[in-house]
Image 1 (cartoon, helix red, strand yellow):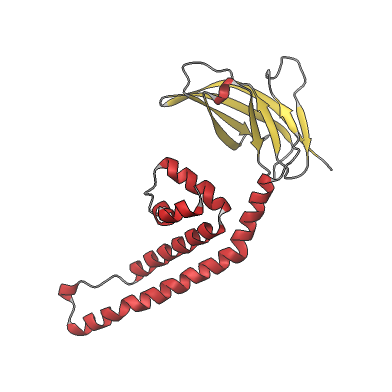
Image 2: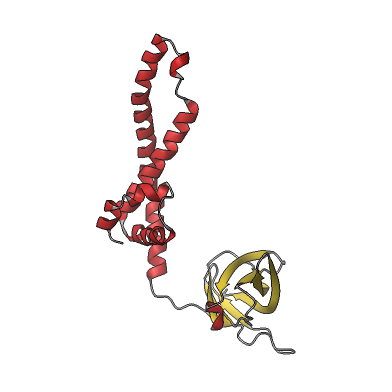
Length: 225
């Protein structure tokens, strides 16, 4: 989707009103990541809608049948005041997002697009009995790649990989489709402040209404000084 198509489709408004099909919604999301005009329109429209909702809740429109003439005259002035207050709120939102959110967002996108050599650890073949637990050494808050073979079974519709920290708490989980699980899965573990120590990756096979643990592998995470 290009900018002209997004404009002709009024994609911004339909996106916020959840009126796009899943396919078109995905295309528009990919587009506005690269289109500053659409991203700005999206933020402005979302800010205006939020301000409008707040204003409506604070100043509900009076029922015509219950209002006298003086109240009706005052009510006729209200839309103008509402528009200006909503517009002012939207401008504040846009100013904040342009000054803070958008530059940070652009920086994150640039980091994702830039080539990067990441440390990796392989759990392919699982942890052999009596063998050493694989280990990886990374920098503080650095992402890394985790490779794993999922023991697939036809009865599972998909799989979920869950990473548990040394304390036993769940760090994250990611779903893997049955098709993707046929090959070695490479998971980009996002950068985060995490403790060093022994981690456990549990793989679950997903069934309708339930899940079954089918694999559990361990690895050690270390940090550069």
